[in-house]
Amino acid sequence: MPVRSASQVPMRPVSAGRGVFIQVLIPPEEGPHFAMRRFTIQPGGWMPQHTNQVEHEQYVLQGRARIAIGDTVYDVGPGDVVFIPAGVPHWYKNVGEEDFVFLCLVPNRPDQLTILDPREPDITD
Image (cartoon, rainbow, N blue to C red):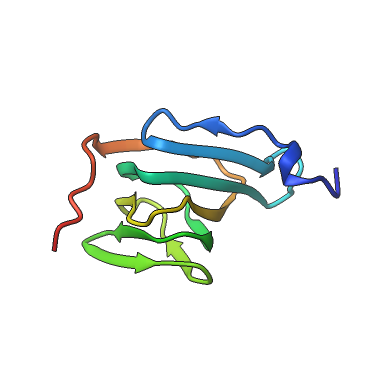
């Protein structure tokens, strides 16, 4: 389907995190090279430290979050672009008072999410 409204795409909870939801806007079977997903992390929500077998290319639409990529922690907000290489540990924590929303493009290759630490990320400095 070449055009659809994102509001028509179901939002599903992501069981690995807390307050995290995903919409698969362009599924792998429709995009020849990439899938496009939109993630929403509610205030106080988080995704634990994990790895994926594929890279992530992300664009922040709304909200504020702290993200760790490897050993480096970043504060990100609207208009920021994030690149997470394949296999690199990463986590997300919404640090704002509104939903943290971002687009995430991934290559259409086999992927596996591996949780490294299921606990809420510690965002203290």
